[in-house]
Length: 136
Image (tube, rainbow, N blue to C red; front, side, top):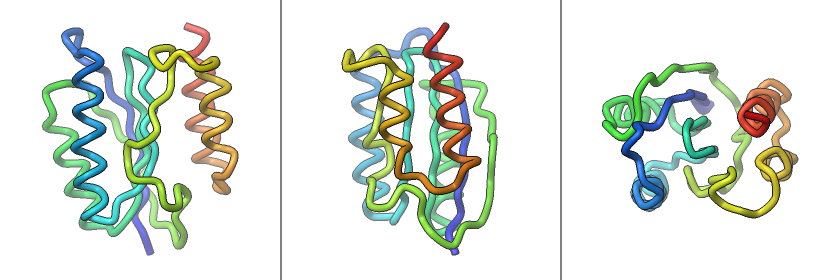
């Protein structure tokens, strides 16, 4: 069994694109060691992230995230035990989408990234975020 956790947070107004790149580099390295996978969606203002992996590792990762001063208002949207990973071999935070990436609309990008997700609730959560934020 794996723990799957989805949260949303708001970036601090001082957050730069280089900060997001730093978050990605650190997350990829740590999560590869910890066996945590998932998806990070950043639209320039908000983060939506799904984490999955061994329960203790996901819990520690989430604790670090909650204490990160680069964002605020961290709200857990979903927490569940799952028997299979929805994000397969993706190193956590290796997928960032949104207007800052400049390739297609946020909705198109998230739809492509989530095509392989089997869990309809997780897919709907991620796609709904893209539709709300993509039209803002």
